[in-house]
Amino acid sequence: MNTYEKDEKNVALKLHYDVANDDFSRAGEASSKIKKMLKQLAIDANIVRRVAIATYEAEINLVIHSNGGNIEVFIKSDRIEIYVEDCGPGIENVDLAMTQGFSTATNVAREMGFGAGMGLPNMEKMSDVFIIESELGSGTNIKMIVKYENV
Amino acid sequence: MQIKYIADVTNAEILAFKQGIDHEVVTAFGSDLMSDVLAYVEEDTLLITGLINQQVIRTAEMLDLKAILFVRGKTPCNEVIALAEEKQILLMMTRESLFTVSGILFQHGLRGIKI
Ligand SMILES: Nc1ncnc2c1ncn2[C@@H]1O[C@H](COP(=O)(O)OP(=O)(O)O)[C@@H](O)[C@H]1O
Ligand SMILES: [Mg+2]
Image (cartoon, rainbow over all chains, first blue to last red):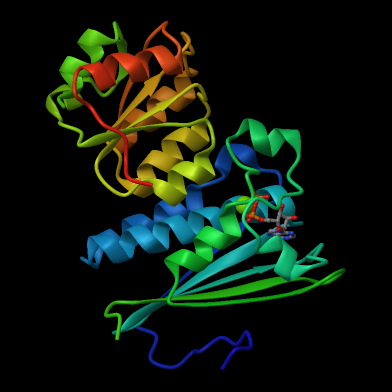
């Protein structure tokens, strides 16, 4: 249950966005589209907000830390699942990366207002289930589940 | 507090989405760290910042914020202004520093968010 795995069962709607690395001018576009779609589907505003924050921080990480990747969103009857995958470089120490304040961001990222080491912890905070797997040299996979009802 | 009133007491010039001037914000948050804004802001909040890039607008969009006040005379480029118009986020700019406008707004009764 705690390993990264895409759950293709009962997906009502699937969204897919590719995110290029270093494309600062477009950073946030995927999250913006995801947010717009969820709003159109009349999903609860608080759920939309949590998904928007989580996908946006994930998208920024793809732009500033990865070699490029993608975000997939599975909309289901009781939850939203977010899958973030990239093709490297991977994270050496995931526990350290999850620590508030830890960041290897460059000055360019800092000038954009990121690189405070708050992204991954906040993504975890927004999710009911948060799974991160990373391998140096191959890449990082993150799965986040936001449930409509917290039971 | 109404945006119109905020613009008035901080001597701010409206740069985008003037239609939003009657909107009322509940609190204010001042920061140049967008990750902190994303982590702490929950209500209908005025964002006060010295950053003027596109990510500031995106951050406000994700949080459904209605107004941003740029300090120290920082003026965003046309692209950023256009994005704010599209997202219906009011942008305004004051020559004062973040500390000074925060003091002015606090004095007029606006309060910060609960951390
Ligand atoms: N997709 C990724 N690929 C490689 N490294 C990553 C990725 N996402 C996060 N990291 C690493 O984890 C650190 C912490 O990430 P985060 O909490 O989002 O803070 P920030 O992005 O502000 O640095 C980053 O500085 C980076 O070293
Ligand atoms: Mg980050």
